[in-house]
Image (cartoon, rainbow, N blue to C red):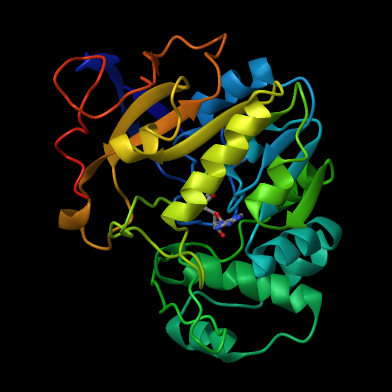
Length: 326
Ligand SMILES: C[S@@+](CC[C@H](N)C(=O)[O-])C[C@H]1O[C@@H](n2cnc3c(N)ncnc32)[C@H](O)[C@@H]1O
């Protein structure tokens, strides 16, 4: 995968980096591409984040919202704790690690067509291998890689007609190898993050949410990631940052979110949203990266988050940018 940056520009006292990602299933030069197409996946961001995290990481690497694991696969840390609240995802990743060939063989029995898709969707898998194969197959062939369950807990995303190969064999093998040095855990982020110690590094990529609304962003699961969860994340992050844990958090650029992290460091990233099904809906969005301390190797225009935020009258107290609709 390639990533191109235009020249970093400064806007209203805050740095803006424009990112134009090229999406592909190919293995990037350094690291692996994830084999899952995960909503909000950070394939596009991984090459930018990897050198920053690598420089700060002295101990364990944590990804408490691992999803498709794009940053983990790019970083390839020696030891990692990967967790997510999605139990089906974590179980499937564990099975891929332990029974790689069996899972690949099973996925290869599926076809990327409507009939096969709806048959697989309505089937209840009887073995762990079948469950992992079905999970990966549905993820790669459903609409937008979404994960959504109905009230009965059944996967109900429609067929996506993506034309994507159902089984990226080499990506699955590489990723399965990377899991051998990782602990996989199905858990809420809070519990896992509190285990981190001085010298550890965390990349937290929660579902995007802001105060009082779900902003048209996606529900990944039964439960929406609420504003209370955002505040909980900020609280636990600030607590462990004081212990010497290096933390990077992704979010949407908005003063409400920035105001939870006074004294942290921020970077504004601008890119086309790929969430919408039609091209018109793919608006330019501003994303936010928050750093618990100023990264040593970073040449990007990062700025200190002011303690007081939001009046917009001067550069040290900016209002949210116009293109963010809340
Ligand atoms: C934006 S996605 C992560 C995408 C990932 N960075 C990637 O590159 O594919 C957010 C993830 O957070 C998980 N999640 C939601 N609420 C959570 C919680 N309370 N604790 C842990 N994980 C949670 C979702 O299941 C989803 O996989």
